[in-house]
Length: 281
Ligand code: GUN
Image 1 (cartoon, rainbow, N blue to C red):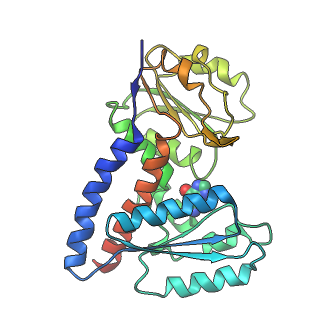
Image 2: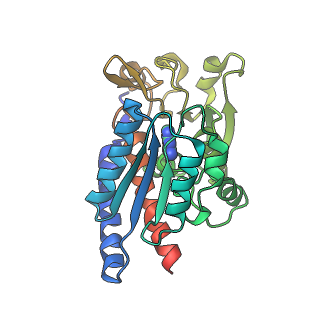
Image 3: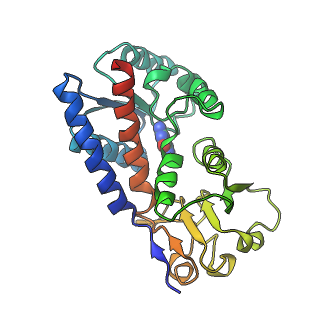
């Protein structure tokens, strides 16, 4: 069979059209949502990702700023910027691009983002709120994955393998999938015979960053395959899944690029809109 394509660009476009309408309504009430991104250093991929978020915010009528610090910026400089942004009423959402240069403690920085502006949902307060089911900002990639999966039908009772246990993707998406009554197995670098086990699962979510990790033979006929991997190989962005072969086996599959990525950015916008609404409502 040939899989149905989960076209992230199209799904994101429709979702953003809805967000743009809501932004317009907020602006009529005198509130302009603003997303401000802090980045330290000149990593090409990170810079390009930050600029994409910035452009996407402006395209739906928000304002957006980038605070670009040097590679050798000190932790105090980042904390000072955060303090300024935390206290600026024109800033709805703040995002600090990670990884940060080695001299800056990510833990300290993430702890210092005001929870009501933490649109990534990375601060310990918001992580705690998410796991206890309170209203909060849910991390954007997991939220984007859930939005893609809505297009494939109910997850109730599905056996799902999540590969990768990061705080940004693997662990939170496992929680969100469990909330949808799926049975989740969280796999990682120490899982024994990992790829051999995958053919028992209805859904595979791979967030490793290892091109070619998942091949057609690892996929059950008709399974849903969500590829969160994004690794630059030469000048090409590639996922964890051998897409060309896997699409002949899977029921649904995301391409890379154009799958999860556009939804992640869309959810940054979604959370920024929520930040503007919640703080003013
Ligand atoms: N670096 C890689 N992914 C992300 C993300 O979702 N948010 C931030 N702030 N940094 C990242």
